[in-house]
Length: 329
Image 1: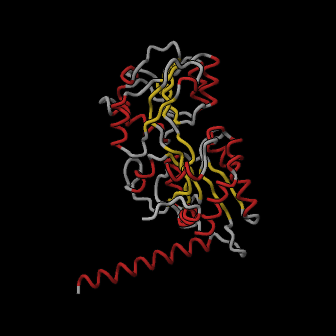
Image 2: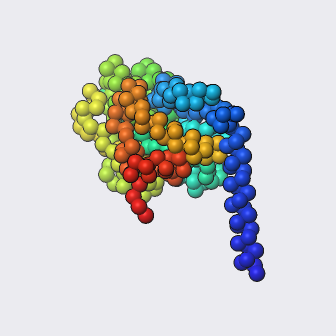
Image 3: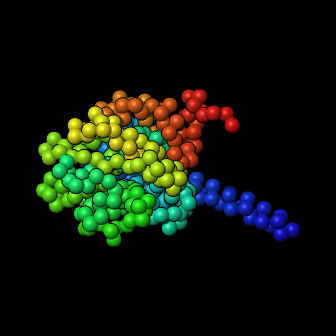
């Protein structure tokens, strides 16, 4: 009898959650069944996520002309949290943050189960940037140095802390920690006030190219055992090589890690049909995204499904199935 009651309770709970999700979707629709608003969690102005989001906004309004779009400067962790709280309908995240969000680990206090994947867009490698004249050549050399991990709550900070942990180091072993954005970090380094800067950027990153041209830079590599340990720590940390010709100041290939940039949506506010149209929009406009940033040049449905992170949104799943890209179970 006890098991029978538990089974009934489970069925009722599933039905209640489904009804709540349907109500959330309906609350975000206008009289024509189109979403009233698309709130997009991106990142700082001038970065790839913000630029892609701006172009996406134009394409979304072509598909849903009665809808409004707004772009918010979020960040990987903030975007997942915003989707969980119902603030964002669409967002960008780095792949390593998604399993943490699902399991309520790291910066996430409770599991996030309504963030569903539309597509994996491109690899986002970790860059540890130092001036060409710097005496920093390996991770241990960061001890006592002024370092920027990027903005607080961004993936760069999480990744730096994980890398430091491999060497039994933490922020207490460094000098000053500067929580600043990409452009500000470049300015501080150019002015001689920053010894190292951690960026999670698609290569070649324009800001690093500019720094290399104006003052000369180097990138600090990880060791093979580092990338293996980081992957064991989080499957979103895929090994990646920044090739020597990527930046003029490099004299060798640089071994690092690169989580995927993942486009996610709020399953509570984005219906299956709308999710399908967003997925189709992403692959129908590949040339548009490549014109926004050359790191999207290799993006297509095959790349996306081969590098997918997280659970697919039902609309995305339907699209990939129709394209014959999902293996039969």
